[in-house]
Length: 253
Image (cartoon, rainbow, N blue to C red; front, side):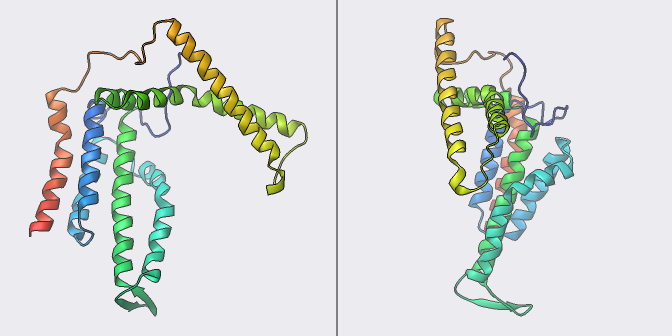
């Protein structure tokens, strides 16, 4: 229980981005995403500027491009949805390579792809430069609702245990010769999920009572020192400020 918990999206090395306090990186990523989402879909130059900003952050954070590209594939379902829009859209249509495409659908596809890709990359850069523990600490410093940070903290700490429980239950089921592969054979799987839920609930209750008996008051201890400095806030503000400048320049030109 005392061992550290790492998540697969965090790159543990030194960089100027890694050195920033977690709360300033969370705020910068959120503000950057808001600016990207608020940008009209027809401002192609603005999206190119956002991509250049993220490229600069990628270099500063020393995040390998192949690592970033592999994990950005999480947005593939949305890309597939975007590809269908030009064919299913209404209104004005154009012909390209013998295909009739909706102009509004093309804009919609571009909107989903551009904003989704920029948002995913920004989130991946945040995760790559900030450990899960620091993310939760940053949310706590930003006065995120206590219930949320508590749930996330305990989920992080006990997720591996629940995964091991599920793995052992599956091995036990297979060792008894029961391997459901069809819809009408899912009873054992459903029973296993129910048993895992009850086990997790009972374990959570025992852990909570043990913590209360040791003086737990609803908030996990956190270091008082090491918060964001003025320099951290100023440095992190460069990304959303530059994005805002790009957006205003694109809209007002």
